[in-house]
Image: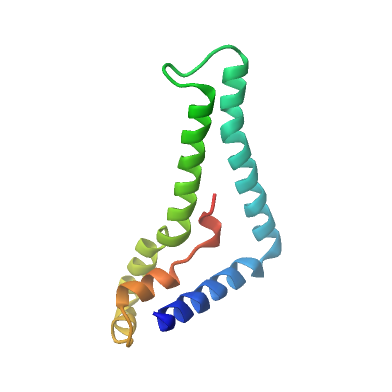
Length: 121
């Protein structure tokens, strides 16, 4: 288990380092994610402040469901969003065999390599 943690940690550091390489792109992506995550619940605040509402939902319930959606989408995006594209690129390039002969779980290795910081928001 410790070995898998070290592999995942190494892959995560490499992917974050590659995301930070282009600083302007990294800053703009982070800013766009922040704006999107602030504007999404802000629309609900505007709707409820104008005396309109979602039928059957209180203001707190609407914000709660939006926050759960944002949080679950961010967690799923970080860890699982890139695995399909990563696997497909290995198949197209013919390098999947390199992953398959590694002395660790192939699925875990593909999952660790597909960590995407850009998918947080």
